[in-house]
Length: 175
Image (cartoon, rainbow, N blue to C red):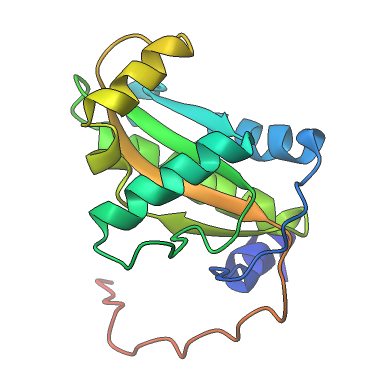
């Protein structure tokens, strides 16, 4: 089987990570894969904010937890040490689609490198808050951005989950 198709079929969402930080070179490869995602009209309207600073990562986890209405102390990033946040230009009609393709590429790249990943929502709600808009400005990100998702990345702690059975009736041919 083709190695790309094999990676697509083998990737799983991971919900338990080891605390060890992946090498920066691995994270750079994952981010680069996101930069090569298809985008409407080739506009490349999505950006990635790579968070490896534990204090910032934990602040993101706490706000994500509050937005998700979980009990205080729950980590919606499941212990992943690196969080790759995808944001997209609010003024581009295809921004959510383009950002979603970036997320998909990064999750596949993480899997190809032997790392685990999971897409965590609520980035939109986080980056609507003044505190996180100010954070973007502090790190040099200007403009109007909408959070698309968090790609939580790290080493898998435990077994890779088995694939769910594929639902029938989802393909229709017109020949």
